[in-house]
Structures are given as C-alpha cells and as structure tokens.
Image (cartoon, rainbow, N blue to C red; front, side, top):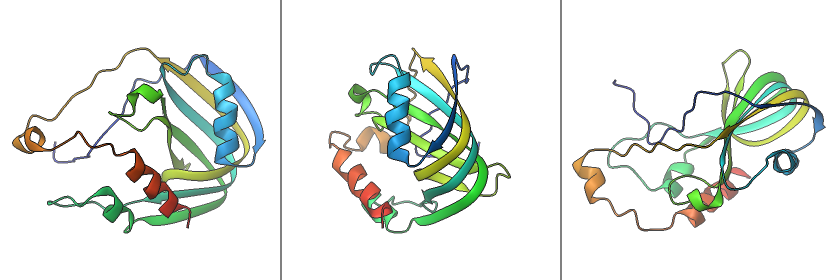
Length: 172
C-alpha cells in the first residue's frame, strides 16, 4: 500500500500467439514485424519477448516528489542504460491510436535482464533469438484517482508532443 506509481497498465497475460524470431536489428524493425502479426489496429495487445539480445538500450527516470515537475523536466534527469550480449525479457503493450488520450498509443515496451538486475523503458534493441508471445486484449478497465488533486488538475492538454520530445531526448 505504500508503493505508488503515476500509472500502471496490467493484465493477466494469456497469450494466443507464439512466434520464434532471429536477428531483428532494431526496435523499429521489431515494431514493423509485430505489426504484421497483429490482426487489427483497433484492439489492445500485451506482448512478451524472451530471448538473447545482442544489444539493448533503455532509460529510467528517478522517483519524483510533490510538486511533481512536468514530463520534459523529469526526462532531463533520466538515466540511460546499455546492455550487450544479454538474456532478458521485453514486456509491454500496443495500444490503439484512439486510446492516446489515456495512454501512449502504439508500442510501449520495457526490458528487464534475466538476472533482474537491470532494465527500463525500451529505446532500442537487437534481438539475436527470441520467442514472442502476444495476447489480444478486448477489455479495458480504467481506475481513476479519488483525490482532490486529481479533481482539480487540468487534463485537457494534449501531451503527445511532450512524449515525442522526451523520446527524442532519449536518443542522445
């Protein structure tokens, strides 16, 4: 009860698709390949990729305290991590474009090493060999905070450009 997070997307992972892959040289190529496997852009998907990676690049931001700074300020404090010849798991979701007001649309993936001693938000990867598991998600249950702060905050601003800028900062 004392652990907090600004947002969590969770599911009971029950994959209905399993694919073995080799030599996918970049995250962009992985996303292109995943797009060929997904039957529709209109539903949510949970994705798990377990395997051997030639390289992985991730980022993470430190815990924040009130008053919470804007996303662009937080991103300036992020740490970048690189892993080479590592076993691990990529997990995450692909959200439809129409969900962009409540979550990141497209792919949002994280990596963790097999030893569980490193990882973060996935920025890039080179998959040597892996097993991809995909689950279709046809239900969405949204839980909103019940707090005075949430009631007062202005959520009408489009944050998509901010997210893009944060991703560009991570490419450095």
